[in-house]
Length: 351
Image (tube, rainbow, N blue to C red; front, side, top):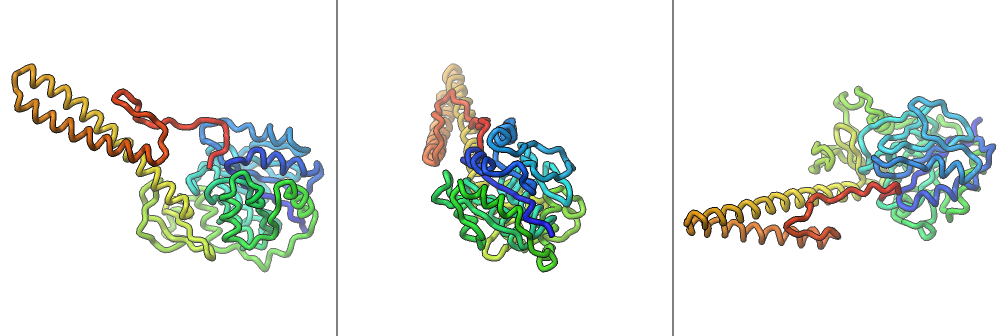
């Protein structure tokens, strides 16, 4: 009989410090492999393996695709790549985003649950929104152990609170206690897996994350069609019900929680507003030029017409600026402003 020798950990905002604290309590002879997903910007280099290797006795690495799983090693997801667990090896793939993230915590947890069932311990740490809740439900469906950081002890409590609201937890612990509990569970015998067969939807969703062509094109779905469209690709979203948790997934594999759909829709609205503001600013600039040229040619009636267009466009642009500023935008806009919002390329966890 095997112990709980597959430890999957998910974190987001505030996760670097939390992960370092957790792994510092893991012994060098840990009879388990540890897999970590931390949300970081796609284009940023990840220094997390070096940080975790310095923080504890275990070696942390960014694994190559199909790398063999070994006990006593921490496998960290690469930026812009999902990390999946299969029997005996890992997969590193650029599959569809889940909850607007790649790597996504749900992808790791679901794949581990599918491959190792009762041997899996899933751990949710600090973070914003709710990535990891569906994955932890998958761990429990296959007889695994669910651990969550006490929200009152988390730097960002949203992810732990979401997991607590939807998953029957085995352990709710302050951060310093999680490492020792995980180390103990790794040496405890896991239950037989026969009582927890792999559900069909878990199999299909894992294959979709791997970009399995058969899973994407077999005409089957993992839910029922909704009236909503995918914020990422515009396709129809299918409703997926995990017990009392409502999720969505589109035909090509993008997956969302309710909070992630709302966040994606908000981003789409903001992008549309920036595009509209850019177009209005160009309209104002062109109308001003035409007013000047009309006056130069003595065509006051034409100048009046373009002046009206110019003033109307300025009114609309002012309204859009107010909407953007009232929604937390910190950019100061004027006639010469760069209207495209800048991306945050810091090497830090994002919500």
